[in-house]
Length: 273
Image (cartoon, rainbow, N blue to C red; front, side, top):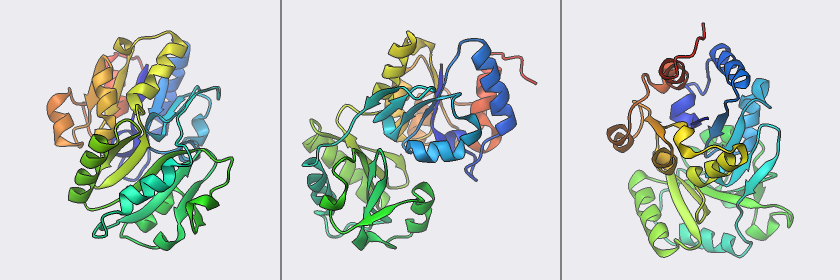
């Protein structure tokens, strides 16, 4: 099994992949009972939009492990907040009135994603986040989220120093309920406790009767750390966070140079041309 993060890892800097090379890799995997996993903080609608030509050929470990599905669509995990969690998380984020929001709070659900209306247009990353959530719905208050919606992740972005302090405080004071993590640059995900890419990947390993030693995984940021520590063959991206670069073997090239695909092909000696 191979599992990979997307931004800064599998994606190049234009959020694209080498589709021809990826198709050949998947064809080889399918012929040899191997599995390719998209392991990302992004949600399934975005993954399906980008990888539309390949749907049905890869497994999902999305929303930082909160949602896990097989390539055939079988749901293995859906780790969601309770409705009483949501206002508590909002208050936790907004308690520091000096926070420099680079984009506002988004409640990421299974069906849709929701932003509090007073954050509309706020922050230098607002337009960027709309790429990730093109169908974002605006709400006046949390109670406007439909009753049948499951919220699996709460996200926002702040200055990097503020993000670091928020993550430290949240994981120290609320570790039994929440887990805060970052993909870098001040982006923060708050997810249910015991939810990360490693615990999500474990569901797929159980399903396919594999173990972690049989997995090569790729990542560039701290939301990949648990997964990289978990698998037998972790690879950090040479363009990634310095901590990961110094603690794990690096991919043979950066995200902008087909680093994930070429590392898999080279290290597994795959006969792909």
